[in-house]
Length: 322
Image 1 (cartoon, rainbow, N blue to C red):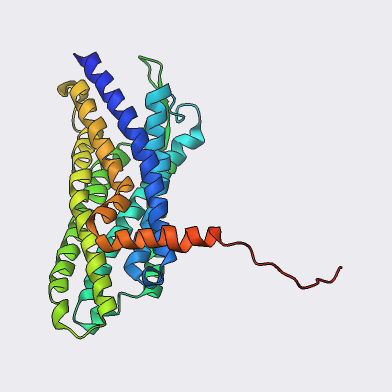
Image 2: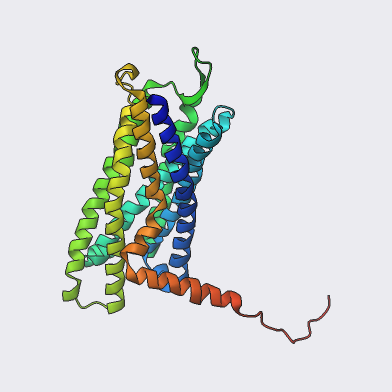
């Protein structure tokens, strides 16, 4: 039973992970193209946060999901043979993941400020301020990940002889389990984004009673709807992995009290759901917003395809020889 369950888990990881990785990378690139091609989005601080989120998502998928697929297919992890990769992979993984979650929280906060009736809060929805906050957000999580570079090392099991990339420091183990995984990866970003997302939704219901430009009003409605739908999906994709990962990494729970086969099977499913957060935003926006679908088609077929089809201009001027 345990071997068959492990086999099913491997098959799910392979046949779900590969499309998830390819579709995720493709979707995040397309989302960045749409946001960077339209002036409406280029002037929006919320769209800027979501663009940076796509960059972090690509980094997270490349260091996390790709390694998971490679390990499942070929049994090659890479961390057991290279000390640099043993330290760099979890560092890059957590930096990209937390930066992505931080930018999404900033996006929900920005939409609350953009739709707020108080001018004091509206000042926070500013593209220049957004760039500063993004830089601060990335620097904080890059510095926060330094313990991974210090404490993670290659440890060889005295029983099996296998090499495992992990940390021997118990203090960091407690911090990683209960603070990084449970709070920073789960409870905190979901709480912040839920609070400001609901407040932004309440503000959007009152936009019709305010004298603001219709273009700005429609953009705020569109972005708020997109963020709210993604927020709902995030709860179902992030929460299962947060709970199971906390259980697996907790130093307080002895391994002999757990049925490792069932826990690992549940963890493989929850991990794929977790990666779905970093791979699904473009498809969520396509499904949630008809206006975004029209913008995507316009950017793809009108802006870029027509530009590629245009012949290069012929220069009939005589250029001097040097």
